[in-house]
Image (tube, rainbow, N blue to C red; front, top):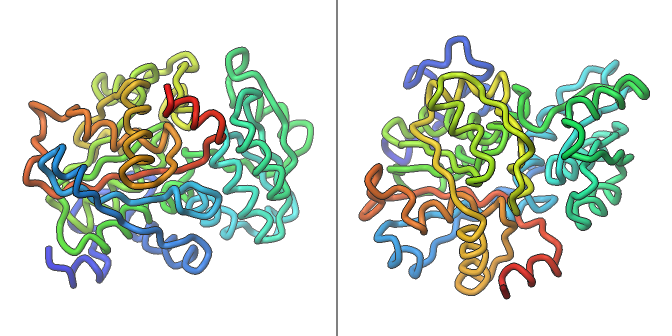
Length: 342
């Protein structure tokens, strides 16, 4: 596809989105709504990374996004579409941190009250930032209670409009703007797009954008090895629910993909692979030492998969143009130092 075709926005005719929660038109609409609110984050390269992998790697750096992660895209797109009645009720969400911060900021900007249900062991920096953006934070034990049960209690007690972290069409469409921007800025087609995966909101939005704007691009999701529910779901053909995974990738500790995100993943995503916590730490060190960036463990999922050779035998990245989504940089400084020093 030519650069002019990519820049023009593409058309849904390139892929079948019938029956899915979103189409490319929803992603394009979200891009218009978040313009001037979400940063158009940089796409960076690394000669060292290219030498190590043999590919041309393009890093979409959402660690430089407002609130430190990509989540503001979906959060603002969702809250900006509230009716007057919904605005009066306020917004409720559950999140380990990045969606929490994003929704709190979006609600504050749009003058809507927000209540965020967060796990007790969420990083202190994410808890502090969420409160700093004006949200009322309610804590729960993620290992003793599923998040949907915790948020149900809050909704019953306080009321409000629930905006989940991934399983919502406006959230999915907003997250898809990550891939839209990356492809527009890549200066040519991508052979492969690699996307961190938790509940599938980012992956589902990105695959819609990528397959529309760049039809020849393969799209692969990456999960922590300890929490491979999306991988199991894709391979079994049905949503697989797991216990809360114990991994340093706190942003990908979802127990299952969403009812809306899974059909998109099942129809359009080429594969889902996993990486270990040790490989995430290796990627954190690489970003810090070679690209001078602080990236949280979850944000390293895609890079870890490519740079640790997880595609060997499936997709050879040598000589290929590979888009890598770096989802965020929200990690406590002490925790970051301990991980990269270890």
